[in-house]
Amino acid sequence: MKETLFRQLNWDVSLLLAGQKDFSLTEEEGNTYGIARKEFLSLIPADLTGAEFISQAYALYDSLITTYIANNPIACKSNCGYCCHQLVCCSELEMRIIADYLSTLPRPFMRKLKKSIAKESRRFLNYLRRITDGKLGKIVMIWEDIEVKVMLDWHGNPCPYLLENKNCGIYPVRPVDCRIAKTKVPCGTVSRKEDLQPVRLVIDQILSDVVTEESAKISGSMQVTPLAYWPLTDNFKNIC
Image (cartoon, rainbow, N blue to C red; front, side):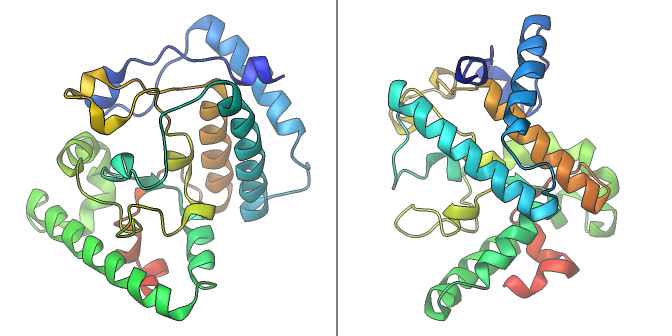
């Protein structure tokens, strides 16, 4: 099973630089994906739904990726934070899991983290106002048209949950975007973005798909939203 899950996809980093997050699979990759997806889902209890399903999918993925990294070292280390300086998105159900986790944190730590969340969300709000001429009420309707621009413009800005020591403030419940980020060379050592060597595996695509699909069952939408934008919505404004 692991051989199938750990097969590497042909992933051109130029697609990422162009703001493209979803990639088409070749016919061979598609066949491999189908087999691996069934194997992955067979390891998750069939009666789990919603947040419980996603938490189990996270745990299964983390366990399998730990095995992969033991035999295929990657350059990613703690206190790096390079991939945390870009537009990180998540589904509504993932955001609910994050919000529930935040409510369990010690108050002193949470007060400090809330300042960061509020600061980055305000910066993102001001940016959105500029590029939409203040028409924030229509942001959902026009998001598909401006998503690539926002991704490119926001590259280099820190995630709201990035701590001063460059570690993640929500690491146990970090969303799919963060979990599947891997590279063969230290990102800060390359002079050109084109020289990055990201690792994209079949299991990464499976996790992304099953989490997004499960969230859609609850929210009715496959849309993912920037972490910096969620606190600006009515459902999550209390986190900052």
